[in-house]
Length: 325
Image: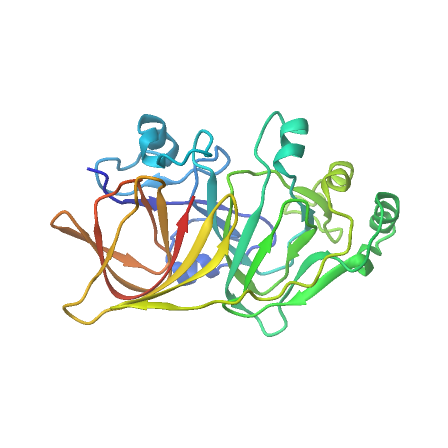
């Protein structure tokens, strides 16, 4: 029986984090600050684990190694889980950084995946912003000089953000999440980050975090970036549920589902044989019913559905990200 697998994340205490992931999602992770939780991950730097059911306590990596069929029959998928899903709480600005493409990572990082990602803004302070690419074309020498003399920000394109915004960050794009943003991130399963600039900050031990300027400049797109616009989004309705496409690329598809059922009404849901799915609850609460049993689902919960899963019934008032690899 290919039943849903509820997941427990690994947390990260990067210096720019806050407390909102614990406060608002009830994670109970003993880290301060709590900057990120890796909600659905098989990456060795931050695995997630099954909670309850037949796989209780096992890592998702262990489960999928034993059951590769859970990933589905998609003809273009490589080995292992191709995506990684996070919550990110930016109490302070993140570093200005860039992620490599698949080709760059394969050539320079022992065949690892690159990192294209998508951000869905769960909440944002009034003046919150992010760095998205460059204001103008430049070259590696000019950008390196500006990093050394502390004027790199003159090259960076900043854009305001608001709750419910969506941003697609293609590998090679110089970027940074700004202070005051609470984000759900869907990305390739990779932890390759090259820091260009970190505001001369020091960590809890008084040390500056390392920069990776040479690799970052080699991996970065140094052409000007068009200011991002919010994509056209159309809600599609069916009884008890509305959904909209947020992002589609060759690595993942992300939909937002709004479940609002009456007492006797439920919404049917399952993963087909082609691919697994992941449900990330970003607001509300309800129940997930399957095979004559039911589990509660709350804001912050993450559920992995194996390919060709049993049919689920969703009930309650829920906002979910429906993620397909």
